Amino acid sequence: MQLPIDDRILEVLSSSGLILSPTIIAENIEKSREEVSRRLSVLTEHGLVEKIRRGRYRIDDLGEGYLTGDLDVSELEETNS
Image: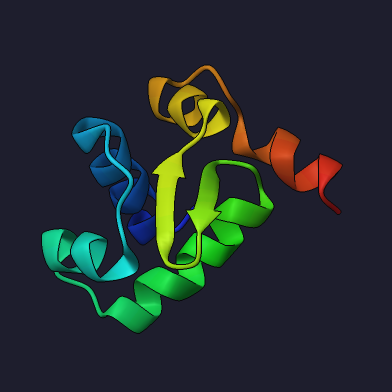
């Protein structure tokens, strides 16, 4: 984790406050839908993003905490190892 695309995905989800699809996120950060989908899977596994239903995601409380600096990503990686 901790790729620049991860931050951008979380920022789009946070700033919009909406449930978004990988396609919409990709269009807003100028990345491919496939790349965004792969990263969303990782972010979901770490609890930063919530999968609402197939192809629909929103930021979770942990993701908001990460963006505000209240959460150290290394803590997530240790607990999910």
